[in-house]
Length: 230
Image (cartoon, rainbow, N blue to C red; front, side, top):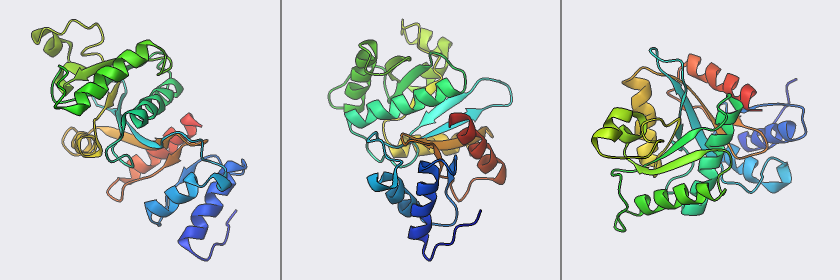
């Protein structure tokens, strides 16, 4: 079915309404501005908004491993506040559940492993870890602050004297801001040659917000991920 729209903004609204009423399953950004699509998604009248923070979640797989790694949030959330970080973590956890990871381990990434008041990201990380213990983040185990090496390498964590059983075993990597997440995300694609898919979570249906530099393969993987996450 082809729906005629006179402007990109109208096209975004009509696409969102199609998915909201069940005539479509997955929303995919085409040749229009991301801001136009996001405005349509966030408008309560269009039926996809939930009130939860929208966040991008990337899923990576490396040639030498069959496991998935999740990276968030490389788009949308520039410098998320603490309450937004709770939603960002939960969005990634919900996606991990959809991919069969029953109780994912979440690492809240920072530059160091200790809490320093002059580094607000470390304070947020410690708070997220404690709040997860109290049920603020559902069906997941959360540890932080952790540097990247201690999040993904048990050996590195042991060398640094980190005793947490979660250190080095992370499924989900949560960056402190969009710059850190975006750099990590693109480094995994262009340097590590990882296979990648990414979708936006937090609305009533997931949607694909592909980068202009994404390969055809990665765009296809992202649509498949959206189907799994529906």
